[in-house]
Length: 386
Picture 1 (cartoon, rainbow, N blue to C red):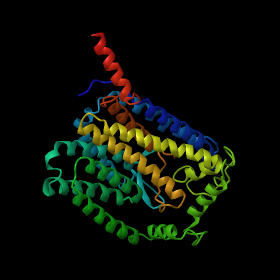
Picture 2: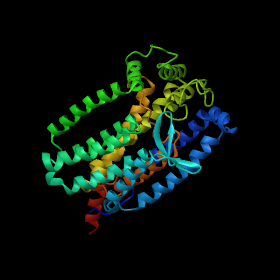
Picture 3: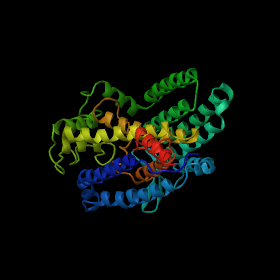
Picture 4: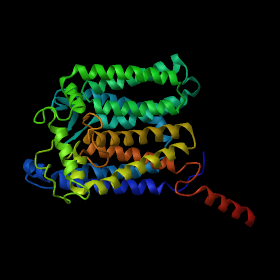
């Protein structure tokens, strides 16, 4: 194991910037619905700040100080607890139903969404399991079948809720980790082919999914019905122009755009900030992804590489899908924009995951933010002094 050095400060600064932007935009996007539901313009902001951001930052600081190898010991236990929570959403008196989906657990005055937790715990378990089976990963019986079995169980429990968007994020992150671990191309092709078939079946099995796919192919269809959300989102994005209407001046947040504080918050951002500023925010997500994959590439061992890959793939892919859905590049999925959308559980566990990524960055083969040439010059200087 390499000697510990300073963390990737570029990563930390990017995360803080996204969190600040998220709080500012949530304050604007939630003002109307917050006042209507609670008589207070800042209810959602305060709730996000205390239950999501503050606890999330505490979790990030804690996990960034714990050596990432520590999670090997708890990976199986954490995943087991998460599976229990995924089942608990179906228990009367514990699970909560909203919009025909059962994805939440009641915690008195607060709620918890287990699918946000499983994103992290499954990555930790998968990285631990794949590291132990390095020699058997490419084997059909000892590598491929166990992988698809565990992935199938997780996917099945999530689809019972149902939550196709979250399942897609988890599957993509898991496959990326499996690929980095050394999976065979034909095994990946088999997973991809099977996934496409299952995806088509799931779309046809639920009328609302089929409606979303139909709208994706033809956004102009039924603008007051199944095409309402995407048309309002496109209207918000388009009306923002180059420089936006101005912070707090969105029209779509006045009950025109569904889920303005959650899945659709990017559309409100585009309307208020405009194309130029939105490009900067997208650039922050791209930079975050680059830093994450650099950390993965330079991780000192396979476990660190797999954990970093899983975490950054999860965050980057989820951000891409959310933004792409708001501009009609992919069908609407109903997943939040990381660090920005309202949701305490999502923010908490995303920041906890980032903390683990920061810890991995402290053991990379070349310190993030320090050029190789600079390290070489220091080494030469040290040798001369000797």
